[in-house]
Image (cartoon, rainbow, N blue to C red; front, side, top):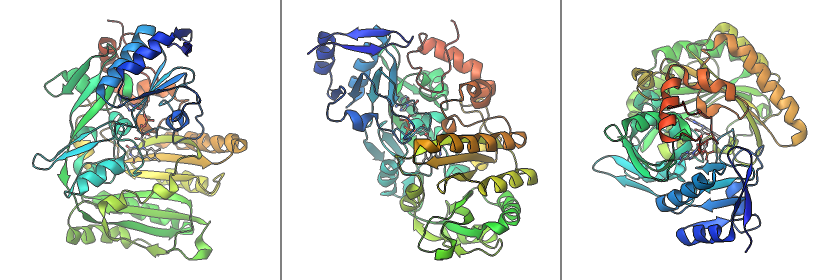
Length: 476
Ligand SMILES: Cc1cc2nc3c(=O)[nH]c(=O)nc-3n(C[C@H](O)[C@H](O)[C@H](O)COP(=O)(O)OP(=O)(O)OC[C@H]3O[C@@H](n4cnc5c(N)ncnc54)[C@H](O)[C@@H]3O)c2cc1C
């Protein structure tokens, strides 16, 4: 077999000889896929269909040794290297054009240590894999709200969802991680081993190495929790948002209630005449016992005159999948996000106006509910710095055909601009699209940026791990 041309990190081209490829194949437990090989298209296809890149070669890793071999080869030749966990990131950095892709999706084991209340999670595991294994023992750790998201990318950026107000971010529950650094060495990062690396990977994304195993703290949750949706007519949106603001200000940490504004999907519990019209949805989950949950949910459920209220006891692992049908892979997506300390009246007006102008029926605005335990951690305790915000807006712009790209992206950008004056200026790194490199320094990391750049300089001085929301290495 002939050698192949592979793009390098500095935009040039290197040749991987047939011998080098054979050597790699022989060293791996997993597979090397070239264009046309079985598995190649599956590995390069990610959640956001806007990203359609063709790596020169894909290593489908079976374990830490495969990761070490691949990183060493990439470093030796200065190759452009992309790392895929769950493949959900909106920016699409899991896959590169013409470079080498390291696909971790075959590594998906989750092992729960019940007595110690910990889980060992491989980087190809999805949230559903983690939830199913941990809930078998009535345990859980806070992760995101869409079960097909990868544990790896979510954790490395911070990670939050229904349990975070009670139990913190995913990174607040990270005990240790095995990290393959740019030298191809496997290091353990924890509070006592390589603590600088441990600090950096708790929010700093894939900048510092490839994580081959996450050790996460678990907590008793459910398995039944009180969760569900309250759907309001959009004509009442302003009143409902104002009442929501008051209700969540009093809510206990166990209660988490997000707002979703969009055109109603054809949900069986909604009257047919509501389908396709704008609605405001309060989506809630209580992480405690059912009696306390009913009490905590009451003020939120008493708001306005809803069209439907389907809040009730639900298996936690099932609730974790509640939004999956709206967030399926394969559509074109563009996101814009802001952090908020509070929900101003003026902000509500802008959001309501934007929902009335959605460019496609699949677009939606999510207002995530944070605070609680997340904000009881110091801003410099982990690389994730946004420890004072109460709400995060994520504008999910979603459509099917390239001909709609322009109008959809324009809608999201316009909404982002119009809501900027109400925002902190901070942004969750995991919600940033690929065209926001200018927001990494002050928006994503702010006061923690310089420290991150120094740690990057120590562990990855040549910026091998550059396919991410990149923190270039500070000179040493
Ligand atoms: C529909 C949807 C819903 C979401 N909901 C939430 C939510 O509720 N809460 C939340 O916090 N986030 C949420 N997110 C954002 C999510 O956290 C990010 O998209 C995250 O990056 C996804 O991780 P992944 O492993 O699937 O992604 P990937 O695209 O595979 O990876 C993301 C980045 O991390 C790097 N990376 C991946 N694995 C590793 C590894 N093992 N070692 C080093 N670097 C690695 C990649 O190179 C890439 O730069 C959501 C995303 C989607 C698409």
